[in-house]
Amino acid sequence: MMADITYLEGKEPHALEKRLIFKNVDRKDWDTSIDTYLNVGGYNSLKKAIKLKPQEVTGQVKASGLRGRGGAGFPTGLKWSFIPPDNEKPVYLICNCDESEPGTFKDRYIVHQDPHQLIEGMIITAYAIGCKLAYIYVREEFPQAAQILEQAIKEAKSKNFLGTNILGADFDLEIYIHRGAGAYICGEETGLIESLEGKRPYPRIKPPYFPAALGLYMCPTIVNNVESLCHVTHILSMGSEEYAKLGTPRNTGTRILCLSGDVRNPGYVEVEVGKITMRQLLYDIGGGPLKGRAFKAVIPGGSSSKILKCDEVFSITQGDQKVDLDFWDIPLDFDTLAACGSMAGSGGVIVLDNTRKMSWVLNNINHFYAHESCGQCTPCREGSMWMKKISDRIVEGKANAEDIKTLEEVAYQIDGRTICAFGEASAWPVEAIIAKFKDELIADTSEDNTYISKEKELQQQFFQT
Ligand SMILES: Cc1cc2nc3c(=O)[nH]c(=O)nc-3n(C[C@H](O)[C@H](O)[C@H](O)COP(=O)(O)O)c2cc1C
Ligand code: SF4
Image (cartoon, rainbow, N blue to C red; front, top):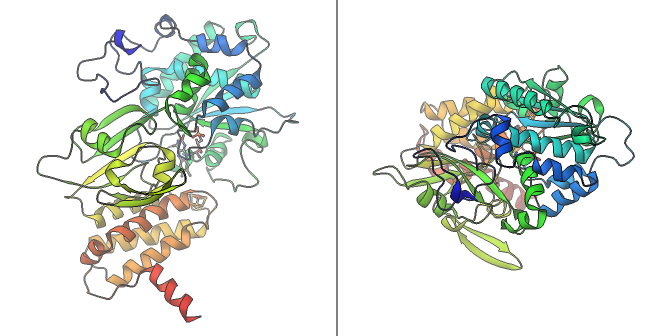
C-alpha cells in the first residue's frame, strides 16, 4: 500500500518500518482536510463498524490483541469490557492527548497531520462502548493541535459522521476539545478526569476509582491514548485477524517509537511490535552513535522507565526456557522489556552516550519529577523534592557516599506507597540508575565513604534477625 505513496524529501519511511498510523504523516500532497482523508478511504472503517453490533466491535478489538500505547500496555478491548453490564448512567470516552511523558512525541504528529484518523477511531470506540459524549484532552502546549481538531470535528459533523443519527444509525455522538493547563499529572487518567471536571488534577485512588466504573462525573469512562484510538480504525479496516498477524503474539500491531538523545538520526518510526531489536533501532534506524562516541545506556519507554545499560545481559524466561538475552538483541515489545526489568511505556526511547554523566542524567530526571508532583501524597511530594536536592548536591560535588544511600532509600520509600503511579515513575529511574551506575555516582561524591546498598543492608538485617 505504501508503494504508491510519496513522502516529503528526507522524510521517507525507513525500510524497517511498517506504517499504519503514520502512513499519511510527512506525505506529499497531504493536508488535514476531510476531503483528503475521504479520498484515501477515510471513514470506511466507521461505515463497517456501524453495520456491526457494538459488542462485535469490542470483540474485534479484543481479538486484535491491541494493547494501549499510552504507557501501561493494557489490553484495549478488555478495558472497554469493564464497563458494568447493568450500567444505566451515561458512558464517556476520553482521548488522552496530554502526551506529557518526557521523550515522547508521537501523538502530536498524528493530530497535526492526520486528525481524522483519530476522530474516526474515537467514533468507532464510542459506538462500541455506548457513548454519546466524548472529549479530547489536549495538553496546553499543543495549541495548534487543538485548532486542527476543532476544524476536523466541524468537518466530520458536516458529513454526519458526528451529531445525531450518524450515517442513518441509531447512534448520536458529540466530541469536545478540552485544553489542559500544562501539567504532567494531567496525563494520568484520573488526574485528567479531575481536571476535565474543572478541579485540580489530583489523581484518584484505584480502587475504587477505576474510570471504567467510576470515571468522569462518577460515570463509566474509557480513557485511551491517541495512538491506541487510531489503531481501532485500522483494526476495523483490516479485520482483527490480519491486524493480529502484525507484530508478535501478545504484542500485536505496530507502534510508534520516538528516538531521541545521543544518536545520529533521532526522530519517529513506526515498526511492528517486537519485530526489531535494540541493535536495529539504534544502528540501522538511528544511524549509530555520534562521531567519536559510544552508546552507554538507553531509557526505553519514556523518562519513568528503568534505564538499561548497553553492556547488560538479561537472564529472562522465553516460553518455558531460561535464556540469556544481550541488550542489543532485545526485541522492542512490552513483554521482553518488562522481563528485562524496564518497560515499553510510551515508546519514548532516550539514548545516552559515553559523554553523559549519570549524576547529571539522574539530576535532570529528578528536577522534572520534583516539579511535576501534584503534592497530594507525602512520600511523592516530599520524596521527589529530597531526591532532587540530593542529586543537586551530587552534581555540585557536595555529596558524600552516604547521600547516595539516602537517595536510594527515599526512592524505595516512595515506590508502591502513593496514590498514583507517578510515585513509581519518579522512583524507578533513581533506583535503576543507582543499581547500575553506583560506582560512577560514588566517584562524583566528595568523600570516599564506604557504600552499603539498600539491598545489602536489608540482607544484613535479615540475617541478624
Ligand atoms: C504520571 C502519569 C502520566 C501519564 N501521562 C500520560 C500521557 O501523557 N498520555 C497518555 O496517553 N497516557 C498517560 N498516562 C497513562 C494514563 O493514565 C492511561 O493509562 C492511558 O491514557 C490509557 O490509555 P491506553 O490504554 O490507550 O494506553 C500517564 C500515567 C501516569 C501514571
Ligand atoms: S503519587 Fe505524586 S502525583 Fe500521584 S497523587 Fe501522589 S503526590 Fe500526586
